[in-house]
Length: 178
Image 1 (cartoon, one colour):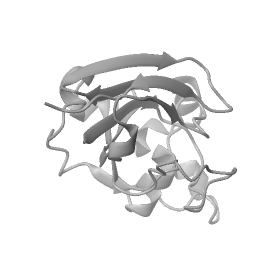
Image 2 (cartoon, one colour):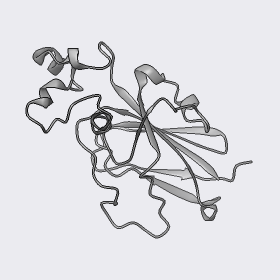
Image 3 (cartoon, rainbow, N blue to C red):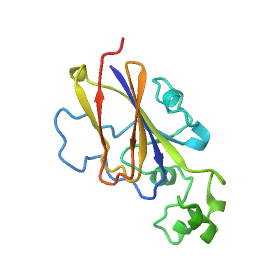
Image 4 (cartoon, rainbow, N blue to C red):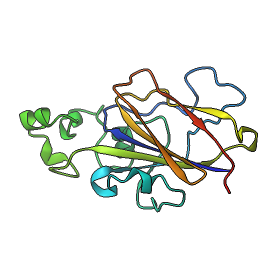
């Protein structure tokens, strides 16, 4: 059974942590560490219903693992320098336009004059044993806010997580694909 998860998240500062979960994980859990792709909304567009469809072409998006932040992924891809080396942090635009103007950081943005929401996208196969059951999508470490799109049985569902610092859980009904 194919299942898709797309997140539209505001860009945030930070670096990735290891692939191991931070808490106890049930034997029934599906950990979605690998296979993520990210792209700025300025290039990918705002249509979550289209982006959340299985088979959507995200081949030109940045590859990453989760958990991560936009900045962590962009540093790994060489878009920005490592912020922990010297004064490199002053070469990275902040999510705040006021901060960018104050310190003249907008010139370092790879998308000048654009807002910075980013899509995180992955597709995965849901184990058959979950068919017809209520399944939690638990996004530990969601550190700002997100619009969450999921697609099962062909029709996208959408939820919004406002200012969520400790995580987000969404109840999704998983059904067999026809």
